[in-house]
Length: 221
Image (cartoon, rainbow, N blue to C red; front, side, top):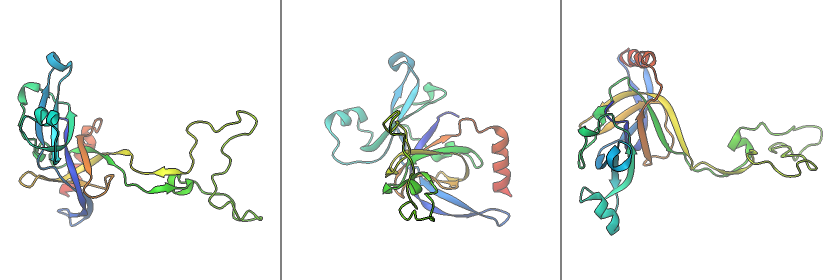
């Protein structure tokens, strides 16, 4: 692993047919346009990483234009760890070819917004009894705390509220295909977020070689 990962945009989901004819659900991620805009070293920043620019943005302010040094007008900037900082320089492109078929990746994104939701939808509560005259209990959260002691609702209590629009990561998804020409990456399974939302794709941290080999065998058939 020369670089930890890259940025992409979710295009949607579809099916991929393996050599044995089996169909797998895949998510299509567009990773075209990843560009190194800054190289951070131990001497100057105290750690080694590269800052990646992705996406197009209009009306950049002067400080951001100076930071990007004419490399492009990027909408997103994020840092990724690298193994050898000497291999990287500003303006260098990062392609989807850093991934191979069978690699396991962690995909992070912003979950879909659901608005205000009750405890059954938001937390999976079962609700109250539907019988014995309790007609107002079917979707109730139940008790939220004692009245006398502590006499308040404790922090962290699962209750109704805003659902979604939070960061979520799906781990150990197998790479089904990586089209370097078009910058398209196919990963098996679903990833968080709406179509068109930003994705952060990284090599799985503690995936293990055995799981990677099993994924490769399943893809090849």
